[in-house]
Structure formats: structure tokens, C-alpha cells
Length: 89
Length: 143
Image 1 (cartoon, one colour):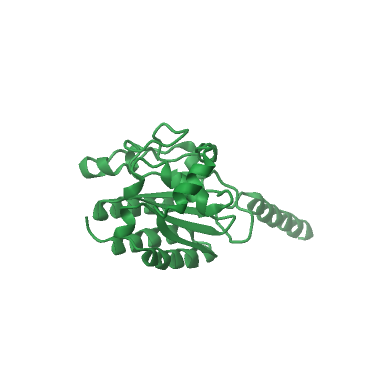
Image 2 (cartoon, chains in turn orange, brown):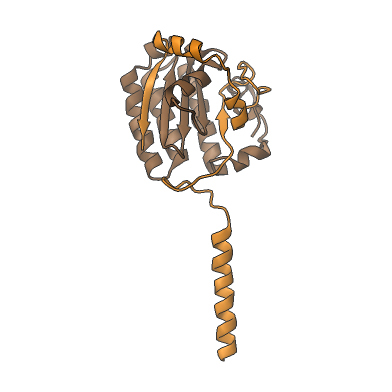
């Protein structure tokens, strides 16, 4: 009887522990969330993205290698050619 | 998910079979969320004639400038809208091109951003993106 309870307890502990070590896919704000960055491009056939071959999804390295012409980007942004909005949560 | 199954030009013709790059399955969205985002992108593009893109990943500081860099990489940035989301930094940037912003005003983007941020704050990345795309498409109107 006692041995059965011990085995059952170990079994439950094992299941809980195994579940806890599995990588969670759910995003929880404020907690570390590791993932491979993705970029969904609407029309990859028409869009050329640095470091890509027209894939819909790109890795972070591709985005990190996007143009090093920082000053030109700043100047362009300063001309107000783009719009939009920003937010945080 | 391949480039083909999310290509809007192809969506009008014949749906391509679903194929997935292995790396996207390690991305921030579940399979179900990917499908929902896929559909939302397709609908937004088809209804507005604009080009919507979604980037999910870290953004370098200053984040706005990095988002604008990404937007610039698109083939037709003037007619494109980029949603750049950094879950770990808890930052969202919506970037519209010169032509696009005449149909999609900054205040419209701000409203969409508020909705998206609310969903992201609740941990719903996919839902926030879908809601944001729907709002932006609605504000942009039909092509």
C-alpha cells in the first residue's frame, strides 16, 4: 500500500517535472522568450531583402545585416518620408 | 511555410500547398497563429492593394530607426506597411511609406498600435497581429 503510494507520487512528480522542462511556446510579457525572428513578407517574389532569397521568413541575421548606411537612413527618416506609430506594452 | 503559400499574387490564382520552413516552427508563433497571420496578411493585401509585412524579432536601438531600415528593404516601400514587433523589448513599430501614409494616417496607425499592444500585453502575439492588420486594412480602405 505504502509502496504503491510512493510509486504513484514519483510518477506524478516525474510527469510534472517533465512538463516543466519542456520549452514553452507561449509568450509571457516580462519573461524571457527565445525564438528565431521571422519576417513575413507579403510578396517575396517582388521583394528583395538583404540576405534573403525571397523567403517569406527570414532569420535575425538577415535583418541584422540590413544596410550599414546609418547616416543616410537618419537623413531619410528626418525628411518624414515614412509615417506610422509606436507603442509599448 | 514557404514563400509561395503566402505570396499574395499566387493567392489570387491557385493556392500553393502548405509547406513550412523548419526554422519558422521555432519562431514566436504557433502553427495555428501562423495560419491566422497568413490569412490576415492575405486579406489585408487583397483588400487594400497595399503590401503588408510583419517582422517579429529584436530591434536595435533606436528601434524606430531600425524599423524604418527594415521597411526600406521592401521592394516598394512607398506602398508598404511594416509591423515590427519585439516581444522581449515589448516594443511595437508601425511604419508606413510615403504613398501609404496618404491612405493610412498616423492616428489610424496609433489606434491599431493600441489594440495590438493591449493584446501583446496579455500574451497574445498572434491575436494582436491579426487585430492590427484588420484595423489597418479597414482604415486604409479598398484599393
